[in-house]
Image (cartoon, rainbow, N blue to C red; front, side, top):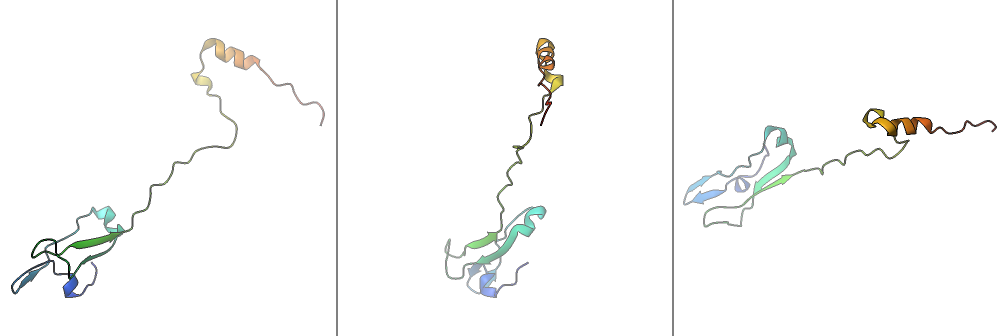
Length: 98
């Protein structure tokens, strides 16, 4: 996936044997998030293994949109009995002059 020098690909070595045995497993939908993967050449985790570093671009989750403008809707279907009648009786006086 990423072009690297052989020294940045070899994660296991023993004598003359060298191999790439470390992989980063991600879901197919998340594969585009991985921007780089490499081996640190001169560091060791165990006697013959080198650490694998993967750089991923992870975006923070989007905040939910909250309605902050406008009038509050009265949900008439949720109001029961007397409350609905009382609210229906309350009317604002009409504007006569400007």
